[in-house]
Image 1: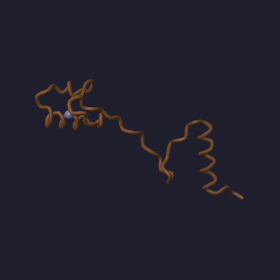
Image 2 (image 1 turned 180 degrees about the vertical axis):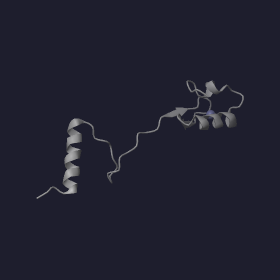
Image 3 (image 1 turned 60 degrees about the horizontal axis):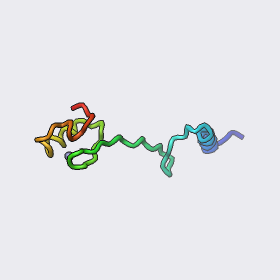
Length: 78
Ligand SMILES: [Zn+2]
């Protein structure tokens, strides 16, 4: 008898477990996405997504217009 799809899936998961390559999943088996890297505004402690430089700029312009951008988000290229 050929192994069912579920058997194959379990086997693959077990193999991944042993190899330490298993991707974390939800209860439904949907792979979880890596958490997005966040950066904290040093002025108001707001957490923003580091890759969304556009959002960081908007935040800076809207809230801390008088401060240099680098002071709010050190290390981020504006
Ligand atoms: Zn801020």
